[in-house]
Length: 442
Ligand code: PXG
Image 1 (cartoon, protein in one colour):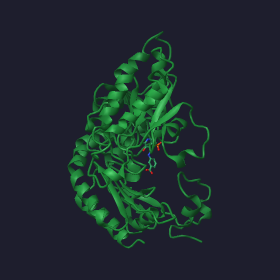
Image 2 (cartoon, rainbow, N blue to C red):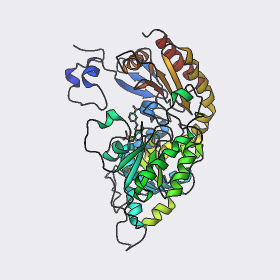
Image 3 (cartoon, rainbow, N blue to C red):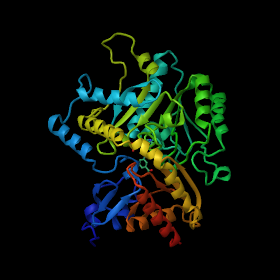
Image 4 (cartoon, protein in one colour):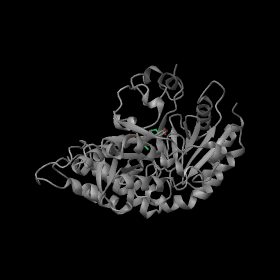
C-alpha cells in the first residue's frame, strides 16, 4: 500500500532507521522533504513548525542563506583536506573562534564529527591526561543515572539509560554513576533551576569513599540533561560538583552537545551557570545541524600536559578522517557569524521568560504531571496510560505532527527546544497546538 508520500513500506525497507520502531514507522511514516527558517515541509506538502530544532541542533533555524553559501563555496573550493599531519587554514580559525567563545581557559579544541565522538574523545583525553602526569591509576569514569552521552562504548558506559544499555553487554569496565537529580516530589513544576537537590552532588563523595580518588579520572554530566526528559540542575549542584572534583583531582566534563550554542541563552551552559569544567563536549548547534561536526574544548593546562617529550612524537593518538572537515569548518564559522550578527544567544535569553510562561500554561492541561524548563528548552511530562508506558507521549507527538507542529517525545516527556530564531507568536502556536492535542487525547 502506498502512503501519502508515494513510498510503500517495501520502498523503505533497506534503511535500518536509528532509534526508531522500524516496523511501526514504515507503516505510518513522517517524512520531511524541505526546510526553511522555523518550518519543515512534509513530504505530503504540509508546513510543520519546528519545535525541536530538528533534533536539538538547528539553532540558527533551517537553511540560513549564509550557512548554505559557506558550505557551497567550501565544497567547490576544497572538498576535503586531511588534518592528520596536514591542515587547512580555516580549521585554525574555527578553533580560535570557539576558544574565544568558551569561558575560562578552555582554549584548545579537538574536532570530531558528532556528539558521541566528542564524548569518547573527552573520556580518552581524561584517561591519557592522568597517565601523562604519572597518575595511571586514575582509570575510573563516573557518569550519572538518566544521562545520555551518545552511543559509543564510552558514552553508553557512563550514560545512565537502561534501554540504551541492555542490548549491549560489553560496556567499559570501571564506570560508576552518580544519582540523578530528578526529584518530582520536591521540585515538580519548578520554573528554571529547581530549588532542592544541591546535596545530591555529594554522591560523588560517596563514590570517592568507595573507589578512592586515586582511581577516578573524570566525572561527566550534562549541565541540563536533555534526552532523558529535560532535567535542569538543582541550584548550587554544579558548583558543588566542581568543588568536589577540585578537592580530589578529578576532571569535570560538561557534555554540552545540547546545551551549547545558545540553548540556555549563552554560548555555553558553563558560562550561563558560572561553573567552568575541565572539558566541554559539543556538536549539534556548532554547525546548526547543517554538516555533522563536533568539538571538544579543553583547558589550557590539560593540553599543555601533553606537550612534552620529543617534538616529533604524536602527543595524542586519536583523531577522525573527518576531524575539521572543510565543509563542516565552513559551516561552523558561518554559523558562529550568524549567532553573533543576529544576536541569537541574547535573543534566546530574552525569550526565555516568555517561553517559560507559555510552557507552564500547560500545567493545568490533562495528563500533565510536571513541567521543567531552562533557557529555550522545556520538558512536559505526562502521566503514562496504565500498562502502556510511553504510548500517550508518542500519540501526542503524532497528533502534533498532523496538526503542523514538530515536537520530541522521550519516555513520558514531551520535549521542546526550538530554533533560537523562534518568535513569540510561534511559541504561542507551538504551545497552543500541544494544549489542543492534550485536551483531546485519552
Ligand atoms: N551527548 C548528549 C548530551 C546528547 O544529547 C550526544 C551526546 C550524542 O550526539 P550524537 O551527535 O552522536 O547523536 C547527544 C545526542 C533525543 C536525542 O531524542 C538526543 C540526542 C541525539 C538523538 C536524539 O532526545 N542527543
